[in-house]
Image 1 (cartoon, one colour):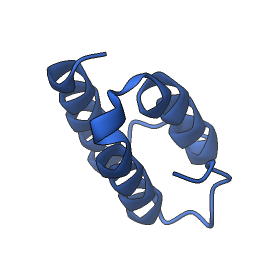
Image 2: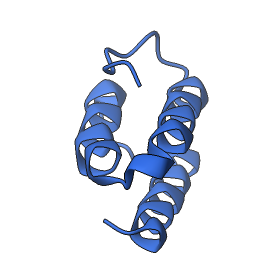
Image 3: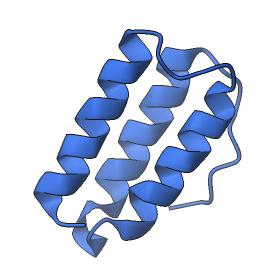
Image 4: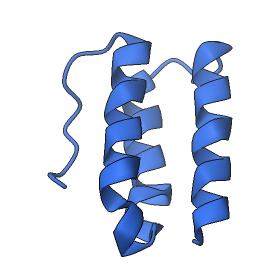
Length: 70
């Protein structure tokens, strides 16, 4: 994924979270997003994506999600 694709997917995910459209398993939503975005993001975006994903966990109000370390 390039920078624009990553930022677009993160923006889409944030909208889904804010609109309550993450389904019945928010942990799975975040883990799937991790697989789709973080692992495919350019190396120079890894920290930024990780930060956004952990912010999504906070927005969802879920406990710690088992995301790999940065």
